[in-house]
Length: 328
Image 1 (tube, helix red, strand yellow):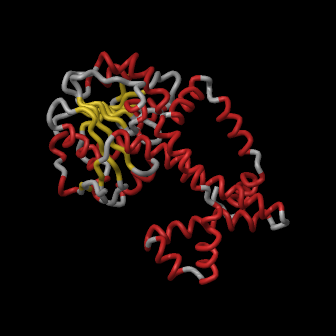
Image 2 (tube, rainbow, N blue to C red):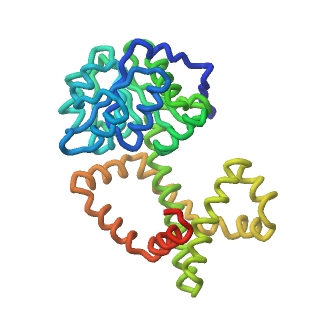
Image 3 (cartoon, rainbow, N blue to C red):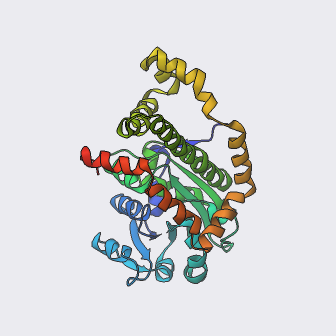
């Protein structure tokens, strides 16, 4: 299945010309996206949490934005672009956003989590859309300034004005995404795909690197050598595969020993049944329910896992490596 991919020439920024966009949240995604939008000629204001608690308010002001609390920013805006942590959104929506949305406004998300799982139910007189760049915010800004962009996705869940898709495509263009391509999906595909990717691809890759490092060290390999093999080598391999494709890298650019190892032993490290199980759990909403419960309890398991991994030999060696080579 091939969905349409939109590029710069397909999108008209003028749809946002006389609109005020309120970026709610000025963190990992909020700051970079707000800066890119402003540089694209969009009228942007920022909604932030209490000034005496969060430093994002001051940061946004220093960057030259008008900053308001979430409720006031929502009242002023024609487009409300929510870039807040998923678990924090429902309470902020109930307290500050829901009753302050203009009829015909556009409610825009960077992840479909709360819409798909019913934590937020927008009124029927606003557009509901989604735009997500496929990278952390600092890379969105970096690529924008280079004249490029980050591949992204858009979705429309509710269109009351007849131009919801045009609006969300303009958001994508304003941060540089349509310079390289923006695909149209739906909230289910974006949300479940993102949750599944983060569990299996990010989680799986990190777990595999840790397991290989630990196995090498347990068998007497020097820890810095093992770290270089597990982290440093992988980074260069991924960069090349992204440029030329996986198969060309395996068959043409690596050694024949490496090719044989990849094709013969690589599949043994992957449990496809567990990947299928995780996909099913994600589709059923199990992952979302577990994550929301963890957040509501104060993230005890997450904090415990953070402490454990921070004290692991791999993290200690990584810190030594970065100091040794001036990279951290």
